[in-house]
Image (cartoon, rainbow, N blue to C red; front, side, top):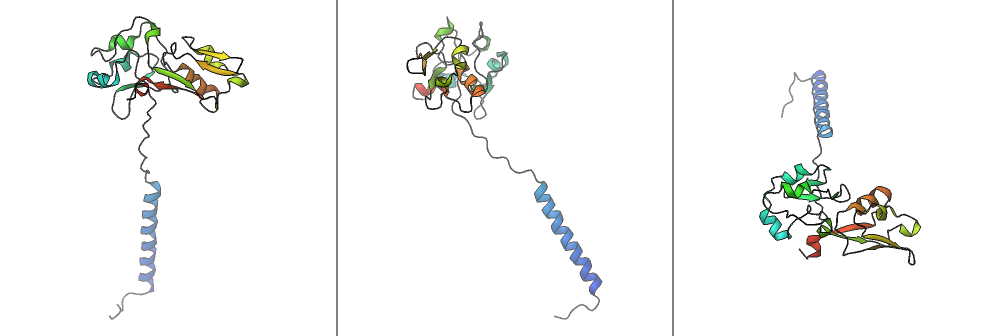
Length: 197
């Protein structure tokens, strides 16, 4: 193949510079490109709002209207990222057990049913990891914040105890533990998991 006699050193340098500029531009596009965000990890430790009926029935009745979310002034009830149903993520914002439970009143589909007393609620039951719990070292923050007095300190064993009968599963203990300790030692097991769902 014969070489082009009019293609000289100047043309070669010009093409080389253009080639390097193109490569730099492509590299810049890749560096500046917004990386694809990984899919969010959907938590499974969420709780249903107060008064929630059994899980299968709840999923049948809940229309995902968001009325209970809007009625929750403390902002504890949020929309589940996966299916759009209302949930509470206790370590972020526990249920404050409002006196009039406006979330239940706002529900027009009976997915959330009225209750007679706060003690009748069963969002879940708190469980303590004694390995992580610092109650034996003097931390009793969760005990003092439990709105239903379901937590107590057994000073003979220096262990935190949960009254399963008294615990309504509001998540206040989990939230408090999350704010004062490096490791969350108390978690609320959701009612649907306790029921094996």
